[in-house]
Length: 544
Image (cartoon, rainbow, N blue to C red):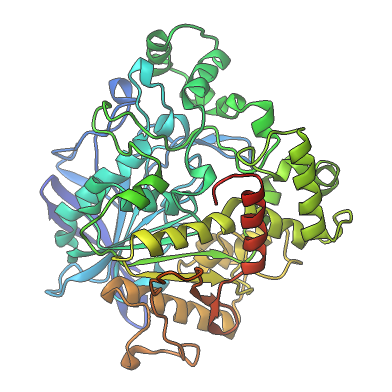
């Protein structure tokens, strides 16, 4: 049951809905609020432009907005629109004198797909903890991340969209009873890498006060696009044009069939890139300092090591126990094909394909994960993939933050809970593997509208929802994820989750909250596997 409500903003008046949630609990929702001018026509491949006035005297914000134009790998269809710079706001109460903490969520999808809309990201659970949730749509794929600097296209437009949304939230969230001085930036996968990029960007840091990163960091190999300018030329060639950088930029900017452009994106990957895992056609790039309002001009690891940020921004970062399930689900290779050529697991940054060194590394990987035999246990293959693409870089980044950014308290977690709301694992048909897939934790924070119709969560699942939401919102409210004794909601919260302590002149080790049937503090999760890769990198004279 809902009632129409209106709200005055500096850009004009909007119309949303007041909804009865449960137990007479109300919340207010406003969908599709534009935070920038539509990035179409001459604004394609341009930095986002602020929107001074809404296009209508009363803007209808009761309907889901456009998502960014994208290619759906499952359906093979192009969906969305170039006109996509919208956000959604969910508030417990727009009439109260109290100011609520704000959580801004950036969706994942490999910088290529995804959206912040209701049927995936419905905040039924979070709203009950009296926080405001804002979800953001931003440009994806080539429209958000194509980079051709010699032709005047600097790139990182998706990140710049997010940054403008954060600025908009700072300037407008009080109208929804949000506290602009208490904003938590939260992302998952590419959204988490994006959030981490914002932590490393001086301009963005002004707009939020806490950070949550699930299964993604700016330091992960896949988070920075390689050979970006070559890919821009290749995309134009796929669309029938060959020319210099300026002419190619002009062609792409004027190309009318946006669906064809999006459908051609994966063709820019080289044969070698297609043979490896998590190689993305377009993503963030390191811009020239001479670009117009560059977002990032140095490698994220160098920023962590050299930038002395004055502000303390508490951070939660973590990963799931079976990240690699997602990689297998999207792989074009069968287990048998991978088994015949394990070199596809080895990052090209470690060794040259087909080299003697690569063959030696493959033998070590086979011995470590598969006891020197053929792949019989797919869960071990998923572990290997997860380690290569997520876990090792996570450990490395935790160590870097602990050494160079210790002014910002850091809390680490590993999500391993296996329940009926682990919808991604079910969707990928990997229910037989114990643990949590990439993204499975999200449905214990967001109510899964579509999938929930067919699933009856267990009491333990609902308790996990309650506990996880309590811990995450405690962090968003106070910067401390351990709820106050008065707020503890279950027997699961019998722990104290402390930030990492800086270790001086000692081998690095860290405590981590493992989230499973019970919540427990563990030391160095998956440490043996990480040590294997550290030693491998040392032997190949690569930096860990």
